[in-house]
Image (cartoon, rainbow, N blue to C red; front, side, top):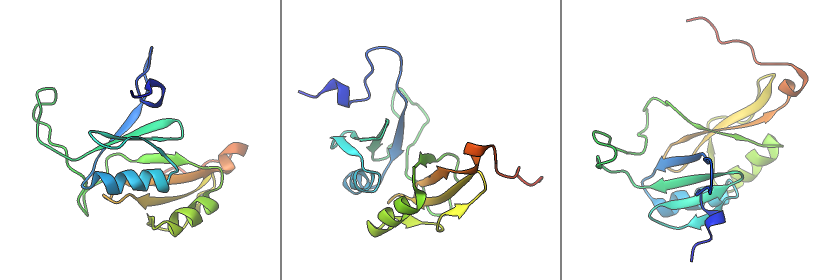
Length: 150
């Protein structure tokens, strides 16, 4: 019997989860359990890992289904534009970076101080982008510079 409290299955209201299309469920499941300290709730069909106060659901890609006609799911390919990414907030970004790197996580850069926060980005085994940030200046009313005009 599955413990309903461990699943993203609210008795009332809603809960927000994040679905990822992955190439290798076992590899991705291990990444989210190990690097982000998640709890594996369901191993397959779909894989569900509870990370902090959310759930990450993973399955291989596939073609359209009756409930999503004309939609094909696939993991990102190198060079694909990024249209969405996970944002992970941590208490100590330097410690997280060091720990995640020791587990083999791939970061685009080391953590960079952006005035409002210190942040960096990593990729999961399928190339999904994940922002990792620590609030710093924003806690004292200091925010990032506005984006440059196009």
